[in-house]
Amino acid sequence: MTRDPLAAVRPEIRALRAYRFDPVPAGLSAKLDFNESPADVPADAKDAALAAIRTRRFALYPEFGSPRLRAALAASVGLSPEQVVPGNGSGEAILAAVSVFAGCGGALLLAPPVFSLYAQMAAIAGARVETVPLAGDDFRLDEEAFLARAAAGERTVPLLCSPNNPTGGTVSRDLVRRLCAVSPVVLLDQAYVDFSEEEDDLLPLLADLPNLVLFRTLSKAYAIAGLRVGYAAARPDVAEEIGKAILPFSVDVGAEEIALAALARRGEVRERCRGIARERQRVAAALGALGARVAPSRANFLFLVPPGGDGARVFRDLRTRGVLVRDQTAVVPGALRVTVGTPEENDLFLSTLKEVL
Image (cartoon, rainbow, N blue to C red; front, side):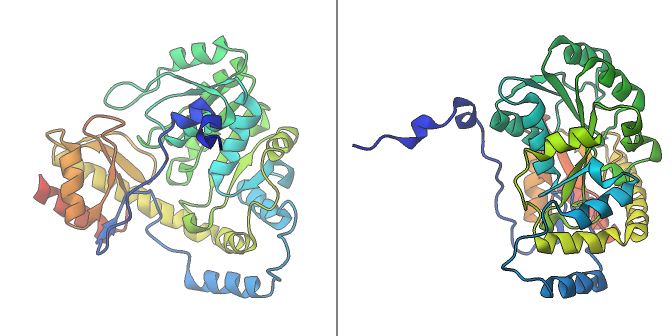
C-alpha cells in the first residue's frame, strides 16, 4: 500500500494559492495587465545577440557566475561586479535573500497591498509574514508603525517595494536610513525605479548603508521580461551570502546575450522611460476626469478604482472588448491596475473605459 505524497507537503505550502492566470484571450487590442514594456528590444540588438548565441556551444554550461553580465549590470548602475548577484529574474534574487535572512523561522515584514509573490516567497523559505498595511486613498505607509514593527523582532526582515506594485507609491531615503538603523537587513525591490524620479533611486544609499539590499530587473524598462534577468545589489560580502542561495547557471546563455545587448542601449531605455512617465501623467489625468480614484504612481502602471466602484464588472467588460487590464478587486475592493502602454493603446483603453462606464 503506497502512502499519499501530499501528506508530506508542508502546511504553509498547502495553504498557498498557486500563482496562475487565465490564458491570454485571442484577438486582444491592448494587453495592459502585466506591467510589460510597450516597446520591444530593437531588431538590430536582437540580431547582434542572436549572432553571439549562434557562436556558442549549446552543449556547454554558461560561464560560471555570469562574469560578463555581472560586469555589465554593475557598470550600468555604478557598482563593482562584486556587489551584484545576477538571477533568473529579480524574483529569484529576492527569494534567495528572503531565504538567507528570514528563512526557517524568521519574519518578512510587508506593507500590503504589495506584490503577492512576496508572501509566497516567505512560505517557500519557511518565514512568517507580518504586515503594516498601507492606508488612505493614496496608500501611504505608516512609517512609524512600520519602523516599530521592524525593530520589534530579532529576525524581522522588512521588504519594501518602491515604486510599489500595485499602487505605484515610493518610500523616502530618510525612511530607508531609519529602517537600516533598527533592522539587521533591509530588502528593497526597485523593479520599477527606471520610470520614477531621480530622488527615488535608492541605490546610492548602498555606499553608506551596509545592511541594505536592493533588487533590480531588466524585465520592465529594458523590455526583456520574456528572458528573465534581474539582480540583487549589496555590499560584496552580503552579496556573496545571497549568491549561495541561487543555483549555479541560473541565467542561461540566450538571456545573458540579450541582456548585454539591451544594457548597451541605456540611452534609448532612459528616453523610453521618460516617454512612459509622460503618458502615465496623461492617462492619470484622463482617468481622474472620468471620476476614477487614481493612486499617485511613479511606475509604469496606474492603480485605480473606477467610478461606481465595480472594478470586477469593468474588468470583464474591458476584456470582452479586447482590452486586458489587471483585476485587483481581491486586493482592494473595486480596484484595477493598468499598464501604461503606447499612446495608441492608452487612448484605446480610455475610450473603451468610457464605453463600459
